[in-house]
Length: 88
Image (cartoon, rainbow, N blue to C red; front, side):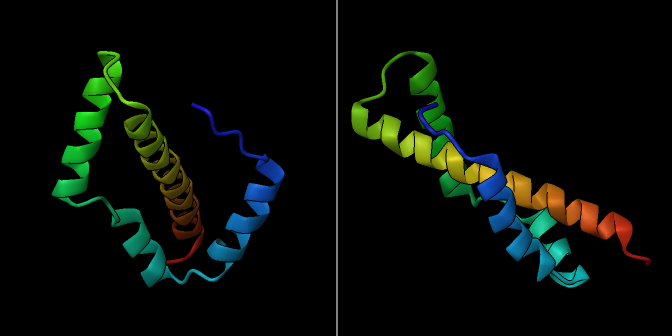
């Protein structure tokens, strides 16, 4: 991957988002997933990547998908932590 993320800066940005989450929003975020079309495209790019067949444009597209998926995964983890701390 070509992306380098300054973790302290990312943490500060994510904190702004997670501070604004209520239980309902956190639950929705935890359940968030890409639709079938996006999942199929990512799978296609992953297969081509594993076979060394990605064009430079496809590599850039794949990198964007991976970076976005990582960002969403971090948000989902923070939402899970928030839900674990809230009384039910």
